[in-house]
Structure formats: C-alpha cells, structure tokens
Image (tube, rainbow, N blue to C red; front, side):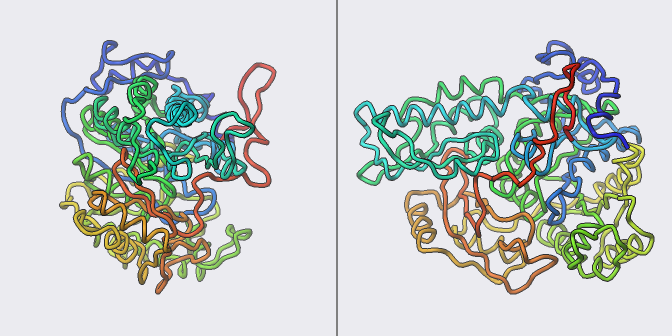
Length: 549
C-alpha cells in the first residue's frame, strides 16, 4: 500500500478554475493561490443546499478516520450524480508534527494538494497567530509605556499562541531583566486561541472586527474588564486577517470541490470549520458534507449547540463514524492486540456508539447513519455483531472502504445518508441558552455525556458568578475535556455511568461570545510524544516532501 503522500502525488490535480466551475463560479469569483488553491469571496450567496454533519464515537489516539470518511462520502455522492461540496477544517501543525499526522484524509479519500493543506496552505493559521500575538504585544507595550488604562498585570487573561505542540510554553515568564513588565505568561496552541474561534464564528468582515474589539484582555485595578478595543488594536488585527477570513477552495483526489477553512480543536475549542465556509458551500452546492472534531460529545455537541445557533443552520442528517478497533478498545481489549478477533470486547464497547446514536436522535432530534470505517482486520463475526447491534439501537450501519477505494467505497454510505436526509426533523438543543451557566453545563453533562452531575472548583464557581454579573450569562458554553471518554477521565471508556465532571476553570471569551468550562486535566497547549511524527518527515534530493501522512 502506498503512503498517503505517495497516493496524493500520483493524482492528476485539476486546475482550480475547473473545480470552481463545478460550483458555478468563474475566474472573477476566486483569488488564485497558484494552480490548485484559491480563496473565495465571502458574499457568494445563491441558494441553500442540504447539510450533512459527520462526527464520530470517542476516538482512539490515532482517530477513527472521520475526515477520510467525510471525503469518501462526498466523492460517493458525486458518483451518484449529486452536486456536492465538502466543508472541512484546516489542519494544525501541532498534530501534523505530533502523534496524529496530517488531517487531509487518507488513502484514496484525500483533499489535495495534501502537503500544502497540511503545512502552510494559504497562510490562515499564521495570520491568526500573528493577529493574536499582535494584541499581546500591544497589551504589554501599553503597560510598559505607562499603563494609561491601569491594567493589572496579575489579571491579564489573553494569552500568546503558537501553532505547535510545545509543552515548555505552557507556563513561562516574560519581560525579564527590564525588557517590559515582568509577569507570568501561558501560551495556547493557535487552534485553541480566541482569534481562531472568532474567525470561525464571524459572519462578515465587519462582524470579525467587532468581535476582535470585544476580546477581554484582562482587568484594570478597579476590577473592570479591559477590551482589545480599549487598546485600539482591533483594526490592525483585522488587517492581518482580511485574507484569512476568506474560505479556501481545493479538491479531492476525485475532483470534488472542497472548502477547507478554520481549524479549532474540539477538545479545547469549539471544533468546527468557519461559518463563512459553510455558508459558501451551502450557497453553491445542492449537498454539503461537513465534519466536527473528535467524538459527537465534543465536536457535534458544539456544532449543534453553538455553531448552528450562531449561523442559523442545522444539518439534515448526521453520520457517526466508528471502527471495529475503537469499539474493541472501548470494550477493554489490549490496544496492542486490536487486530485479533474479539467479538466479546467489541460488544462491550458498542454502548459507546449507542450513546452517540441516542444523542443525535434523542437529544438533537436528527436522523443518524453509522459509518464503519473498514479495516482489513475486521472479521465477518465482528462485522455481523456491529450490524446487529446498530440495528437494535434503531440506526443503520454501513461499512465503508473509502480509504482503499475512494468514492467507490463510499457509494453505499452516500445512498444511506441521502435517504436519511429525506426524513429530517427540526433541530433541538441540549440546553436552553437563557438558563444560568451552571445549568447549561450540567445539561450537557447529563444529556450528552450521560453523567450524574458537575462539581465546580471555588475558582470556577467564582468566575461563573462574575461572568453572569457582568452580563455574559446568556452565552453558549464550550466544555474543554478529554476526547477519549464521554466523561472527563480518559480512562473511563465505553459508556461510563454515575460519573461527575469536575470544572476547574471558567474562561469568558467576549469576542467569540461563548463561555469555556475547563474540565479535568485538559491542557490548552498540547505536548509532543516520545517519537513525534516530525521524526519521519523530510525533504528528498528532488525537493519533494516525504513521510507526511
């Protein structure tokens, strides 16, 4: 089997103008970034298509191939004669050089040019990093130059960021030896920063600038919030982001249009591609396939409870991706022996999938199809156990071969999804936006995670009271927690019951307009493993990138 990058390099890419034409766009509607990438204008509204959300069960460390299935599903729809467009997130350099590798799909279900998309792409993440750190630089310079706003250096909330897994930057000291006001600083990965969230939730350039100005940078010594607009920096930040806000158009290996834009993580941020990318896809295609990060308890919950509210959209059907291997892991199988047939472990792990099915159908009131990402090691007995189990849970399971067969391996899934979308129902939410912050968090834990309740640290409780007193109580909640479990404990697999989620911190994102509840030991800046993917990435003598997957 060829590597992902070898498969991608064998593909004959179509000129991006040809891909744009499939969406009814001409040269005047795109800004080319070479022959195979382009930016779209943000006001191309023509008609509204049907929206399919792809999510997953709680994944293994390597993921379950959610993006790969999304791409294969779109290619499968195209093979059925549907006019379809993908709307995906941009990869972060953190995972690319960390444990997961790239995020442009895999095998014969990829978006291309994959090396460009996985690395610098059109520079969006670099622009977000620069805009974020410009605000930090202006903030610290303001304090150094006399501090006219009387900002309290011990109550600065806005953090610097870097699009890299670098645990050494979690806690640092800046301004040492007279080079500014010395204080503690804490870096976040770019995909977790508020500027990323703002870019992905903004509905126009004007909305982007307004939200940037509403970023809470800290407090003054009177205890009042200080905003980015008080530092008069939102205009300069917007200037850095004026091109980054435009969605990016690329293609799949089979020539299906793909809009790839924005990239917040779902375990520490809101996990969805930009609203503008979704708007563009819906306005240009009859069918849109989009994905939300990690398991349905994270990405899908945030897509449905937050993005859908802000954007005024809802999916017509939801796809939950799973693998036999992951189900066996949830059932207690040894992670080093997942290739061995183990129907008993599989059946013990199936309740994790059942819970996500129940959530989509029962909590959010949406049709659901299960996409089983097939592996060569899946046995007939294991496949039969999944099919029977999912049928008992009231859903349909389809085993896909998109990794090996591309769109041809996704046709059956495409047929099932299109059929499910014919019977769509109105979206319900997991919580009432008007409820207090504590109640909203508790509703997500009880309704979506299946937990018994929530405990709040003294710090979190005080911050909730403060946020509500300052008028932020009606915002959506974003829970930052582990992706590996329905709970906030990564070791509690399958479908744990009776657990309590502990919220240790609360962060008000005034520009993104949501409240983050930090649960468990989740870190806003990931670290690298013992042998990161970076060790295998290189450039050969011909200047070609190798080892990227």
